[in-house]
Length: 508
Image (cartoon, rainbow, N blue to C red; front, side, top):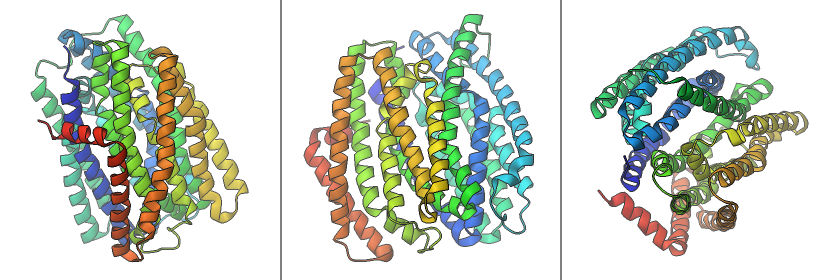
């Protein structure tokens, strides 16, 4: 069955952008309430739990991604019996995963206090909160998260995004009421757990409604099981390295600098990841379509599609990079009410913007590589990158002056992505699927985009610099000036691409 790439990508993108907007606004309000009502210590504690339990998600081993990508061919062939067998296999795997997550979490509990430098907030039972977070992490594996694989394999991530949007809005409204009325962190955690369960129930209902003929039934043959497990092993290595790269920063900061430093870093990192969600949405909306095209179109056709998709992703990334660079620090100042423990010097936001651009420039490569199932070629890349990140971060935390230690952690992450991950994963894609000649054309486009990013940064900064106001009004005026300047420049340089993107989103 040949899927309509443009239709599914457009639908996924619109639903994903809505969800990204919700994830941009509501978590921001949530962090703000944490800072204003509970204080930075609770915010840092929340960030620590997220990092620790991020390590627990390694127990998933990459089975989810491996099974979804294995489904692309049966979807293209219309083999429903095989899809049911994959779904049954996936359900069994996730039940084992849920058990492993919970057991690993129990084993880590005795060491939890050692991960925190200094005191925990008064009146808090660290272990009660930890076990509630642990149950929330493990719950999806025991319930119906596996049903999302059917939707993803059919390029219907818009359904997942819409469910997520609905649940997130309800969850955060409930959380806000709890924080306003009680200022109780226990209530916050209880609400989070309840809405995790609601999400899984809605996912089950929608997957049954859209694909009533797909349910867990039958068994995969031994060869297909071995293939999934083999792919999962490679994906697991990617997850290990990714977790070391992403979660170790909070652990290093917590152990060396304390919970307030975790909160400060978390604020900057939150802005970057929230904006990155917009770029990621554009890229991941195409994953299912790429997976279908790989089994139905030629490689030359797919390379043209890849370049076109990359231009769209990079245009969004360029706009976000330039605007964010111009207004990042004013935003943090307004958000934290100029709290000196949370507002860093100007180098910190600039490093975070650099990390954002480097990371987002690889999203099309990662998306296509995932759709093609190319994990084995760079399976050691995340471990090497994670080790480099950890080594540089720890070294700079030790040797840099006090006010620069946090920047050392950020620099370690940038170095690991720029010098290890980007070249390695690009090499795999252009040797295992595309050609070396096509690789040269891709790198030339990326160099041009990088040069343009520098010019756009200076243009946005100059536009924001002309605004003399400060405070909330100053931030808003600077944002409008920077966004206007960058938008005008991109429309002038990429008028056809921008209009084509807008027309695609407008079509029904």
